[in-house]
Image 1 (cartoon, rainbow, N blue to C red):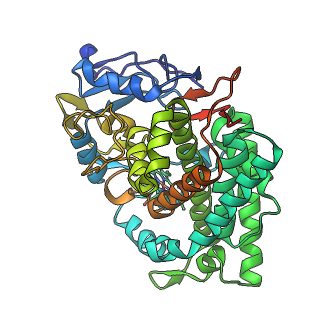
Image 2: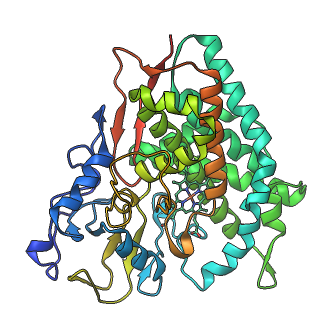
Length: 407
Ligand code: HEM
């Protein structure tokens, strides 16, 4: 990570905090950590917005917005807070935005209306039998191998990647290769990240070329045939959309499953509550999405603007950790209590505004089905003795080395 550590002149010293989403205590990889509790404690500091001098993956400074209402104001106001960035492509020395995440309205709208129907609740309902069958197959595979498993690599990632491949209309032949790419892209150092980005793009480009020659009824064929404003999408647009689905739809779902099982493994009473009340699973998953969300949307100010007394200048980065808004007591009574029956749970795990997650229906179904199948097939489980799951903060929070034991 390149560090800049410089506080711009316009940032008043009292607004600066040494908190950092990557390296503060509990944000760095921590055995048995709880990065969500650490974020929740930031609310006690009394500064709803503060400046963190090097808080992005590239070591840039950003304003950090904690309260749900302020985050809504930022994320819904794309005139003042732009999403236009080129994070993925800059990692490979190229210069194009992923679509639709790094594009602002009104241009954003034309892509969103093209893609929305593909991920609608009706379309996702048709994918459910596949998700269920895959979850069953993976869990039965684990059980055949013994009474413990590393959940991220043996269950959560393969499930999310398999659903993605199915969405693309591809078989599971190269499943583990894809799991490796997702890991390198999102969790390894710059060199591996760049190499993985090339591999993913190479794969998607080849697939696009194939589908242009021989269309099927899959997602890429849909994209190559699709029209926006009376013209076909270019190859560049197709790859910029497909690669975002890869980045946006794999790690997030796998992480949600992992964080939920991490919590449940450490809280046998909550496991029992779900075993006694299987119908509670959807609202339990919703509550765990609130309590353990993984993403921090980032925007760039397009003009000078004040927020909670902070002088944000044109060009400043503004970061909205969903884990902070979701622990805001003004929005959620007893925010640190995990209540599977919580009502009015309008959490921000999927963001607000025009970029609100397009994959939220699919994500919810994957997590609910994944956990329900786990509970159907695996008896009470715990962290395997002698192992230590490692949690981490950053742009995407998560957990690794999650070895569960049900012996
Ligand atoms: C639990 C799982 C998931 C979480 C927590 C999550 C979270 C998010 C968040 C917070 C955003 C907004 C980012 C921003 O405002 O800057 C977002 C956008 C997006 N997500 Fe998800 N996501 C999940 C699953 C998925 C899945 C399964 C897909 C694909 C099938 C997906 C595709 C996308 C896309 C394409 C966008 C960009 C939407 C736009 O810019 O209009 N996500 N997601």
